[in-house]
Every structure is written in structure tokens, then in C-alpha cells.
Length: 354
Image (cartoon, rainbow, N blue to C red):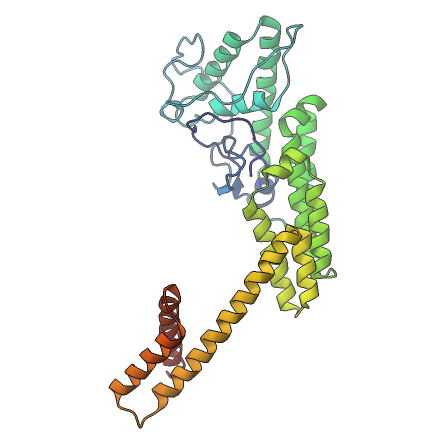
């Protein structure tokens, strides 16, 4: 999911690394960067440390010929052509800028073209767009906020560490460093508007890692705490956590349960906590189907092995009996599946005999 969640343009603009939710992971590992333009169901992408930002992100290159922008949308670079501007600029009845996440998204939309254009041009484009869409007072506020944001990005880039943290304690310390950086760069209302969901998800991620790493907790206990952690998220963010994240968590806790030799009651508790009773019922039904299938397969492979091992039979006779055995117990898609499993069993036998 992405906490950069606004209604996106019908045609997507180029993804911009680094600035989205889980920036903390960048500071922690130096490898995962968040797209500032992704939809709620998009996944994280590994972009490498500081892939877009370099020293001097807030500096102007005065040597670059400067176009004369009226709206900021003139002669757009290739990555923005055919897209609609992401984000929003709005002012209240008194002409003051409305501080929303959309303001940051707007900055990110244009800043995504760094590397295609000189920074001075990118910044001039943003400023022209702001002036063409806001009154004087709100525009002044927005441009001041832009300067603060550019300075913050510069500081963030310089703080990126390419090494992974040694412990969960260090991981939390880096999250604290990130939040201190934000608090020092912006007023509280801007921090909440620009990074509120990011911070909530960062803490969720770190706390989730802590629960998963706690060897004193049983599977059901972990599942219960993870579900409580999820429920504590803001409703809008909780809705955007995609099914893949939920399934991954269930797989991790279930794998630990299996390694510990847990009971069926524990597995049921894990599933109910993480995905609900109805989904737990469906998973149990799938377990029963898989168990029935596994029994059929094992019986078939054992009977087949006896036929193949009977040296009193001619090769053609063995093949005919194996075919008859297969056809007697399997049909349709199951017939194709059992043939594949037979080949796998034969390959394992050859490998074992070497």
C-alpha cells in the first residue's frame, strides 16, 4: 500500500522513489524506496539508496537557461506527458493555504522529473504552477513550504545510511531520528498533513517486526498482537493495507507454528485473529482437501512403485498397468497433476540413486 493516497490521474505518472511511506526503511537499510505516485495497492520497490537525490537538492543551478513559465505545465518532460497533475492546491475563505497531503503530492509530482531536467527548471516550474493556481497570500505560504520541503529532502538524503541496523533498538532509533528531522523542518500541522500516515505505517512496521522477533510469544499470541496492531492504525490506512501483506503475515506466523509443532487449535486461533472466522473456515476446508489429495497421491505413487519394481513383468505390461492405475483414480485436471507428480517422484528416485 502507499500512504501517498490521493485520487490519482487516469494515466499514471512516473513513480518517484524515496519520499513515501516507509522512508524509515530507507534510513534503516538504505535499499527500499517508496513511490510518491503509487496507488494504495502498489507494492514497495527496491530502488537502491538515494537513487534520485544527490547533494544540493535545494540549490539552484543559475547556469541553466531558464524557460519563462506561466503555468508550469509548458513543455513538460517525457515522464509527465499524457498525465494529469497529482496532488492539490486549495485556499480557505480568508485566502490562506489549506495544508493537506495533496500539497506534498503536488511537489512530488514535479520533483519526480529530477534527472530529466535541471533542478532550477523543476523548481521554477513548481513555483509557476503555484502562482497560477493560488492567490497571493496562499501562494506565498505554498512557496515558503516548498523551500522547507526542499531543505528537508536535502537533509534526508544526507542522513541516509547504506548499512542495515544491528538490532530492533537501532531500528527504532533511526525512526526517531527521522521524526525529529521532520519536527525540526516543519510546523506540527504540516508534519501531520505531510507525514501522518507515513509515521503511522512506519511505527506499525517496526512494531510488527518486534512482535515477529519475540521468541517468547506463541503463534496465537503473535497473531492476536499483530491484529491489534493493525486495528490501531487509522481507518484510512488500515483499509489500504493490501491482502498480500495480510497473507504474508499469516504465512510467517503459520510457518512458525508448524516449526514448533503447534496444535490445530492454535492454528485456528492464528487464522481467526489475522483473517477472521469465515476465512479461517475456508482455510480449514482447503486443508482438508489438500490432506485428501495428499493421501490419494501417496497411495497412487506407492501402488505405482510396486508395479514398476515387479521384474516378472515385461516393460510394456508395466506401462499398461501404470496407465490403468492412473486412469482408475484420476481424471481431468487431476490426471495432468498426477502425471507431473509421477515425473517428480521419478526424478527424486534417480537423484537418490546417484
